Length: 329
Image 1: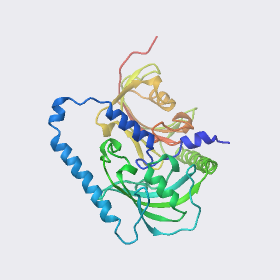
Image 2 (image 1 turned 90 degrees about the vertical axis):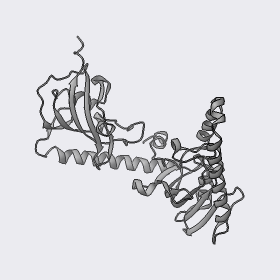
Image 3 (image 1 turned 45 degrees about the vertical axis):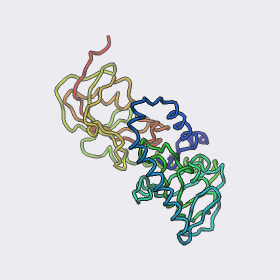
């Protein structure tokens, strides 16, 4: 059976909505520990004025919004309006939820959306911003709420996302509760998703190996020569410089040196198995397309960043620019 702890670690968290209180507090402590130079203090009046004006604008929005038809206000100051009613289960604080949501600022600018990513977000109810937790505990499966969260129930004075959400921001979410789940149910759901992803990858590779020009190594690595070079080939001990792009079998690109505008250099024995094997087949000046089974990629765990799911089959376009160091003797 797939361990519950791993299933939780592999959940797809909402990019901004699922930040915990503790991280927010840490940000506040870090900010408080930074000294401010006297020159910065003397030059900060205009910035401080803008900050105060922004905070006041958000407070005034809350004051106006609570008088709108259908808006209810809780003791904490959370404001919500029921857009659609369901009749399913209500989440518990120690449970999990699957939700669709859109988040925007008071001027209507959208900063995050599960709809934009094409799949619901799943996360623990008690480990998100306080306003999200409180709203979810009011809802039933099938409900859609418009939730207006004061900054002190969201990201406070510090904001979040490296400036994506400014400090003192009131946040407005259209929040649809799809499912309320226990930890065990989440583990089962994640296991089903993982098994489906692994099966999809195997089916892709089975079809792909029959395509014209595709060659298969003993390990299961599939590759296709796009352009053949005439320079030297690396060994596993070589340092190489490459340009590359990487995508999942659904076409989503997760990494690209082309997009960053500069090639990547690394020791060939310090990367995933499929790269170590595949680049040794190439010569300087070559361009190959590689198809990596999950065993030759990031395996059962996926990447730490979450951009590569568990059991993911990976597709890379790789140009070998140079072999930069001699093989170790």
